[in-house]
Image 1 (tube, rainbow, N blue to C red):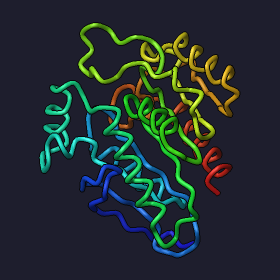
Image 2 (image 1 turned 45 degrees about the vertical axis):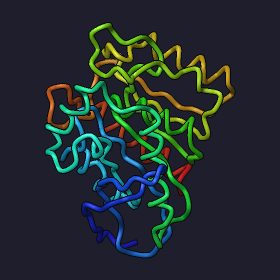
Image 3 (image 1 turned 135 degrees about the horizontal axis):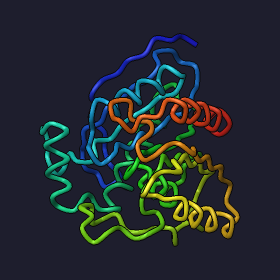
Image 4 (image 1 turned 90 degrees about the horizontal axis):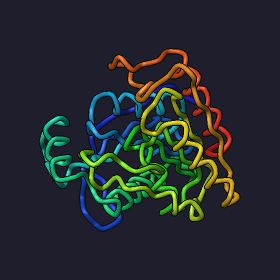
Length: 247
């Protein structure tokens, strides 16, 4: 395979027919490959998330980041769009599923697609990656420290749409990889254990890794929470997982 790739802002059609902004990073050769929908975190459709998409493209996958806040703040900066969306309590789960559905259709429609698509998300996006996998027919899903799949948000938590969804576990359509920090408050180890119990009870295929010295956001290279050892191993786990299920 060639290592040439193209990364650009595009427009995709969400599952409900809305046209939304997205960021695409994909290989330029025609060798068949899987696709990854990268779900951004609560701070928005930012440069850090776009860099993650480019890394997937470099590693041989097509990737796309739907701008989840496009409807709430079209054309705004990532920070302003996040402020607008979060001031309204965050985006509805139905909108997330619609946007990921459109992103998956975009990836499957590329000429070098092998027809397989996965999701990945971080923090709120981790919960949304799980939500996508219990709502859509995906081939793999990765949850990076997704808060409130289990557990109850504090009263003053700003994202009002982040309600527990562990009851949807029996509908999980694909294998799940979970990457967590043992020092995280949301999800804390007890909340991760509740999700694992639900997966076991539903007979689902999953793989969890917890890093003893890592807290929330350990993949975030531009934040103090960044943990080199955890993030390095986490990336190795992601690529091994996708290699198994996306081809």
